Length: 420
Image (cartoon, rainbow, N blue to C red):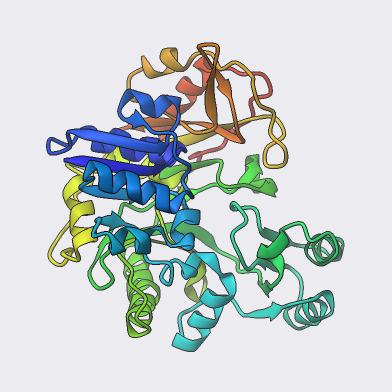
């Protein structure tokens, strides 16, 4: 079978790595891919958002299954373009992907369907936002409506931080069109978890639980990022997982189906487990990053049948089995991330890290320059440790990190500490 993976980050590298171990998979293509993916896939120079070109490529090679990593192609309608050509794809339609493409859409859906979430108000200008803050109180959260590469959220604990957020959203227009509408909502307190399922729009197969670390610095300090690390499993109790599935995931899928919004792919729910039960923070319409790098190594068996059943609408009765081992993922980022990352720095030690027992390295913001691996983005590498316990997994991950170096390398030193 031939598989196309759309995207070029560590998440897509992890998917390619897992699929390369499937007996039924003969050829893997990655568009645009990255240097690390070249070890398990043929890298194709097509951008992830080049929807028509990707569809023409898939049709020309008679690709059996396409797996979409990033959200932008889905929000732009990649799954719809592929469906028109009869090409199976793991990823929701453009209408289904609006769950991630519009925070306003998701907030209104939750309120309409009684899905537990934070109290919130949609603001279109500074005056409306100030009224919302006065109503909700501080701390308060500002969320850009559209896609902002995981950086369109500001959590404000003081009045000064609120003023800075108001300026950033409504005067500086820092998020462009994505910030034309802003969800202002109460700041929930509790434990944040990542809950991912495969779904064909009706049946669901929960993936292993995970927790990610969004803030740049240790102790959840510093600015929000796309994710600085993850662990799996999380410490989520079974009864809470059941509540998330029952009260958040399934009602959302039912409403999408009622509205005729096709959804065959991954549904990711970012959830805050509060004293009043789990409440939705956000939906993503694809595999999480960096959660995927921690979750897929724990899958016991073949990923391909699960993805095929998702794309075909045949998930009913399907189950996923998970290894008892734990995993910890540490993201290595460039200097300047999450702002303007420094590029072109030589990366040393990846092979040495991979030689360690229980260590995987998935590439993201990398490139080749005159035959040398160099930094080419904000999040550069995901170093994953595997172990019988979480402590073992964390130790393996940081042993791998110690072998790697590039100038300006920054990472959190508390990933997985105190978990499990």
